[in-house]
Length: 423
Ligand SMILES: [Zn+2]
Image (cartoon, rainbow, N blue to C red; front, side, top):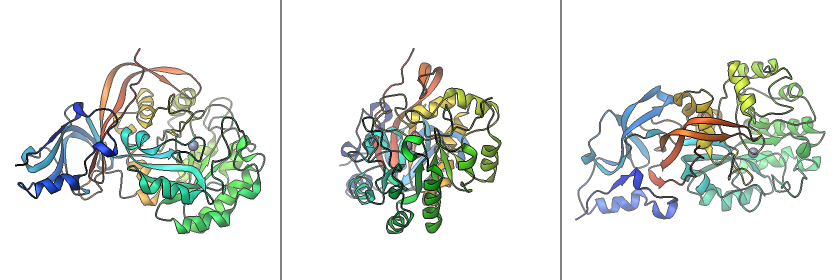
């Protein structure tokens, strides 16, 4: 006799990714020996925040197989094989982090994907240029193909990806211009079009030297050849922001957009450059990419005061910031709650907005009936929390999102989170 098991969120322990998360298929084999249920899973009683539908209200979410099958005020527990009790929790479409580094063991800044993505509420992550044409097959074979997190990638215009630059070796991947090969990049993208969503180029002086505009042109050539966008990493470059933006097209992504220091979006008086506003109006996406050196509370406060909000919030989580100040995407989003974004505005920037940036993500970022069943569940903790930017500046946050559980294409995962420092 088989009885329905209930997943109570407060009982989901730390780090139960993969091994402990039974697949619904496995659990469904039990169903065939017992009674049958209308739904495989119901996430019950949570505050559903789904900006794709303008929804922020108490709802139950039902999953059948790998799809969202129903969204309703109340779905009876008896109709579901499994029930997640999401009372007092925030339930959102699965989060999408469009800037991470998960080529663990090859790019010195790489970290393992699953403990840092799906265990943190990020069901889909985009590796932002850890691999180039020569190193991409390994990223595909050893990371993308075997991770529980859904991983897509931006291909670095440098054939070596980010394998050369580390804290001990300041030699960036584009200092030798011969590594910037548009033809090889385009060929690699054609071969892996199902998982590569664009081209990445980093323009900081220690990475691209004085030929930043030339490597950006080559990234542009490769991206145009395959009809995909470029993600441009700005800051501390040889050329000015205006010169760089001249080569940026609608659909492209500017990452590290709220960075401090030179080469950012603000002029010396703290005003957002006109060129930045013009590009955003034309359809260029501003992405956060917090990282170890690329998010400043001061810049963010000035930009938001002038009405400029980011299009997407991403973490740029990697080896040199995963133990702080980034930790994970939830901590990055919590910084924007402190900065004054509403919960709905913040969630939109990690769900619906990123799903619009890259074509391959269009079917994600929503809890609409029939959509892929990617769901993230969070607690919204209240208290006094210390939030730290990439320059060591701190702010007092009153609420932080803490990952509790994720569902990716109908499969359930628990959460691992490092508690944000309470004051
Ligand atoms: Zn990065």
